[in-house]
Length: 122
Image (cartoon, rainbow, N blue to C red; front, side):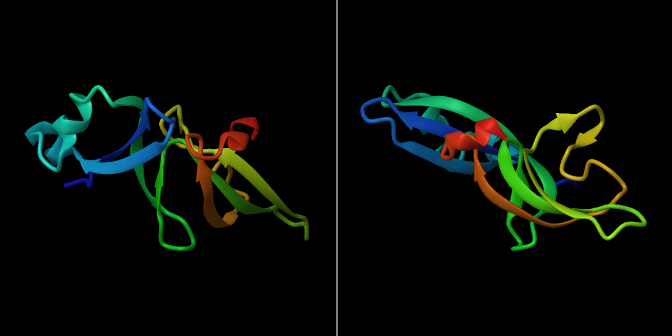
């Protein structure tokens, strides 16, 4: 069975503090782990909910939708290597973490769109 998870991003209305919690699909459906407490709370608003990609970065961190990643891209038959950045999104039928067969490596999470607004410019 797939490990279906979502990362919820909440913003405290009083001061804009961002708080993120990862829930399993089972805990969402059961209302356990305080999930319903955060939804039925006038102090917080939901900024987003991001799916777990079932992928890991080079530091063994789970990669979620809307994470900003940095990676090294190798090009076929050339010594050219580029360091690139992007926001993780679902694209057609797969996650856009690996965009080509040219070989992306050293993928690492550098933030997410909730805590690191400069990533929105990637």
